[in-house]
Image (cartoon, rainbow, N blue to C red; front, side, top):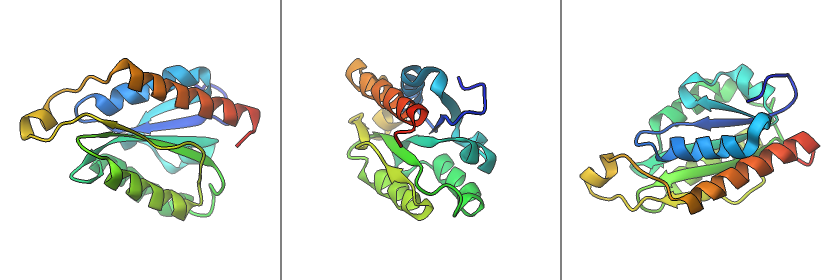
Length: 164
């Protein structure tokens, strides 16, 4: 992961059942040394300032982004407001059904920060709708992990090359 002060991709994630964690790990693998992987609970304003762009990865819980991801935004929103405009971002959501609620929430916050979406959202539908299915550990298929590796690689390279 990133060891110098050059702009890097900050991959911010939260997971309850392993799906979002696997997606974040795959994105970090794709990005290689061009990324820093951090749990949402650990992210502070300085981490956001130091990054050249962001990949937000979380589950959708009750038609919303997960509480830990929301808390990360709540803690840092006003501290970075007006200081990260124009930076690229993308999202990956692990959903039990459609993932659209979490996606919309993150996009609204990113709009407030004046971030620039540079890739289509990745929404992985885990088809978990009963309490037992929702709470069960998740395994993400290789086809979806490839999407996450590719977005990590693309974002990290774009940041490194100054494309974004």
